[in-house]
Length: 69
Image (cartoon, rainbow, N blue to C red):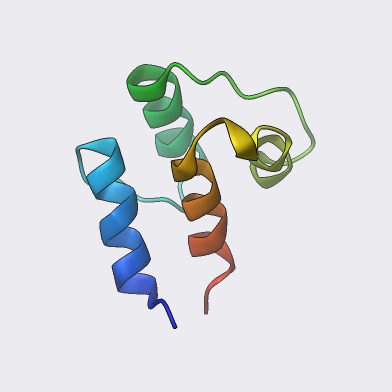
């Protein structure tokens, strides 16, 4: 089973920097600036990321991280 700390480490490795995956602003900045991923307008940040989840592995990891206890 993947731990939350390990998932965070993988996210930061993908991004090449440390940031808070629970921060909508930081996630949006990393996706836009590092990966050139523009999220569609949705009701929530998670909904927006789910809409483009297949675009990059980091999005799936962030969504996974956000659902972990």
